[in-house]
Every structure is written in C-alpha cells, then in structure tokens.
Length: 189
Image (tube, rainbow, N blue to C red; front, side, top):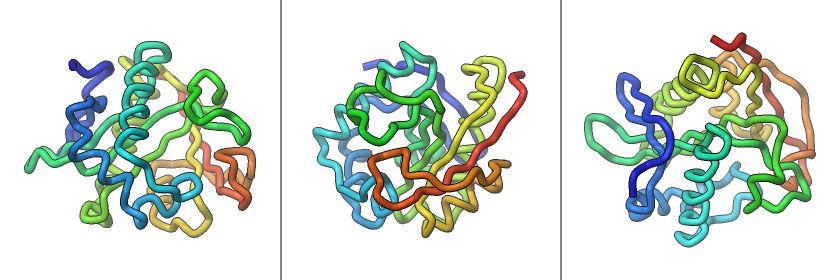
C-alpha cells in the first residue's frame, strides 16, 4: 500500500503518511495509558480503531491535502509516534466522520514514552507546520493546538513553535473540563 501524501524530512526524522503495514509498531503507542493520558478522554485505542484512523488519515490527504504523519527515526528506522494536521473535532461530532469537523485545523502529536524529552515533538511539529504554511503544502494561514491544562510538555512545544495562548474551551473532543487553545497565524508562502 503506497502512502498518500507528502514525505517530510528533518535532521533526525522522516515524516510520512501511515500505512496499514505500520500497525504492528504504530498501534501499541495508542494502547499505552501514559501516552494517551491527555489525548481526548484518555481512552486506549485498539489496533482495529488505529487501523480505521490510518484509513481516514489517508483519505484526508486525498480530499483535503492535510492529514497525519508517522515519525520515523532516521538512525533506527523505528516509529516514534505521529504528528497530524486535521480538522478539529467539535464536541458532539462523530469522531469517525472527518467531514463533520473544523473549520479550525489542529496541529497535534503523540510520541511513545522512550521518545519523550528528546525534542522529537518540536522537530516534527515544526516541520509539519512549515509544510502546512509553505509552498508545496496546503498554505494554511492559521493553525490551532489544543492541550489539556496539565500537559506541560505539549504547552512548551506549542510555545516554541510560536503559538499564542487563545484561552480555554470545552468546545472540542467532548471534554467536560476546559482545554487550552493555542493559535498561530502565518502568511502563506
């Protein structure tokens, strides 16, 4: 199965659309309670659910020119996690329906535990953001990041990338607690 969408390269990473062949290494990341602690409601995801997400991400690249990337460490070839650029899910929307999302486009990331604290999230998210706002990408002019108030590492990543604090909301992901929203605006290049 050939990947749909672009390949991005950084000093330490190759970012590419996920394939079903990645599931053996990719799906366990979504079954780790520590990794999923601040993702949505914190629920763990089965390999079947991850496979459905991969299919939706591939389709999103085709229909909207945005989607998700697996992060492959150049040195080892290991999948470290993912970084995505997707229409944000509003509370009350069907999480499996990508057409019932947005209009905001969200930048997000998840990494397996042994990749934490090494700058991979900032490196990957910076590459995706630059692609998203530049020539060859969808040329977005605004992107949001949403994080749980207790997720200090995620807040640091967003701030390093130039996102500004845009307040709190319960409008996304069916959350009963407020999430922090960050925004970055860039001129399309």
